Length: 297
Image 1 (spheres, rainbow, N blue to C red):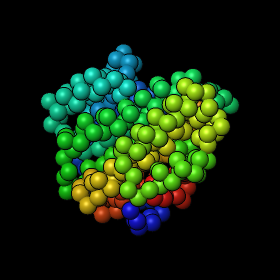
Image 2: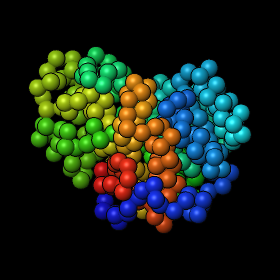
Image 3: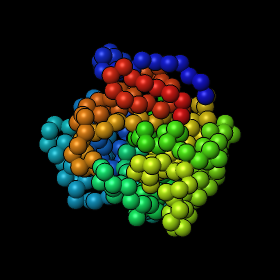
C-alpha cells in the first residue's frame, strides 16, 4: 500500500486552520483515565469534538472525565470498557450505538505491560496479548458497523510501539509470514499462538522473538500486522487505519521515565487523528517526534 510521503511535525499548521470536524464528531479513546489516553481525550475535547473516555475502572474513569468537565470541557463522556473482556466490549458497543448512534474516530490506546524498564519477563504473556492485540482487534471489529464513513473519512489510530517493528523479529520464517502481501488475520493469530506456545514450552528466548519486552513487543507486532491487513481490507473506502508510536513517554508504564510528556505525545497523536481528509493516508506507521517519520506498516 504505497502512499505519499508527508512531513509531519509540531511546525505543521495549527489544527484550527485545517478544521473539518464539529461537536457532532465522536471520538472514542480506550484506556484513557490516565497517561497518553487521558491527554488525548483532553486535546480532542479542547478542539471541540465529542469524546468518549473509556477505562476498566469505573471509579477512576468517572473521576478522570469529571476532572475534564470541571476544566470547562463538558463534551467529555465516560463509559466503562475492559477490552480484554468480550462481554464488556459488547456492552460498550451497545451503549455507544444507543447514546451517539455511531463514531468517527477510534483510538485504541488501552494496553498493559508488566515489565520494569530493565526487565524482560513473559510471566503475564497471555494477559498482555489478550489486552494489547486481541482486545484492540475485537473492539475494532465490533465497532466497524458503527463508523459513519462520512465525507470527512472515519479514522482508526492504533497506539503502537517501535518495539513491534518487523526488524525486531529474528526468525526469518515468522518475518516472511508477516511481511507477505497476502497476510491474513488467521496467519497473524497463528504467529501469536506460536509465541504463546513457546512461552509455555520455555523456549521463547531462543526462537527469534523480539529481545526487549518480548510479550509487549509481540502484542504490538501483531497489532501492526492487523492494522495493515485492515487497511488493505478497507482500501478505497472512507475509513483510514494507521499506527502511532508515541516514543518513550513519561507514563505509569515507563514508571515516569521518558523523553517527553503525555501531553506532548497527545498533541502529535491528535494531529495524526485529525489530518485533513485530502492528506490522510492509510496503512502507515508513524514514528517519533520532530520532522515526522512515516513508513508502510
